[in-house]
Length: 335
Image 1 (spheres, rainbow, N blue to C red):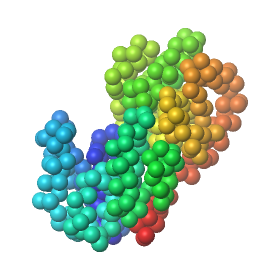
Image 2 (cartoon, one colour; image 1 turned 180 degrees about the vertical axis):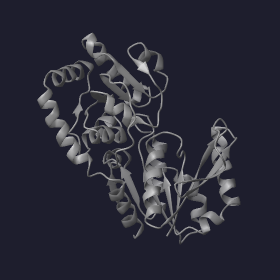
Image 3 (cartoon, rainbow, N blue to C red; image 1 turned 30 degrees about the vertical axis):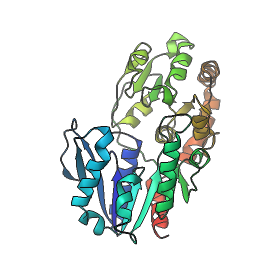
């Protein structure tokens, strides 16, 4: 089968959607399918227009227009290169269904699907975001929602719900430290709550490393060491005692590497993002800095209780394989 992915960003750019598309593509190619990815190439990225990564053919659209006019640049490129769509058996959009929307009427009988990966960072969700998702749902042959909360907050009727997948990656030496924060250094990742909670802990437990970048980089740097985005996240996870994160992929990676996860939220949507997940009882979820710092302190002092929770988390996470997720995709495409 010839499969075409549309995604805003792709490996080697770092992020959850980027890794999701890469790993799903890898497994599909191993199964004998041909995978093509069409993605953006921002001007500041030194990547080739045409590439091949682990058997996945990659086409990058150079984005030279402003954000406002970007969609027209993409549509023009796709029209010029419409043979890529013509030759595909299945087209799957990762969030960016609007890329394909004009061509849905040109290739009416071609199967097209969408994965909704997350939220836009606005609470409450904007009406425009809900409309775009509803249009994507109506004009696609099926969808995967990454998280049950999407149905509640966006009114999407999910054909399948997933929380991603994970695998153990290569090991390199990273010097051990106390706590690791993974995520963008922004308010919507819960970083202010984490920072406040860390400040309330004893100084001996404040050796913290931050993997990510963003507008709160200075505030994070005043409490710990900001490393930035890295592609060997699991090496840092293994070197830490506790992991602070509120993202699905980072939670899964921490669980698979037998680390206790502490998560937080600053609005009801992100609260449901965590509390409607199948691992809600396998991690520590707290809304306030006081409650979060007390839980970190409790599990720091009660090693056996932490180990029991870690073991339960690990046993669940190790079943969340990329191979299992690919089976979900293949079953969806049979619709």
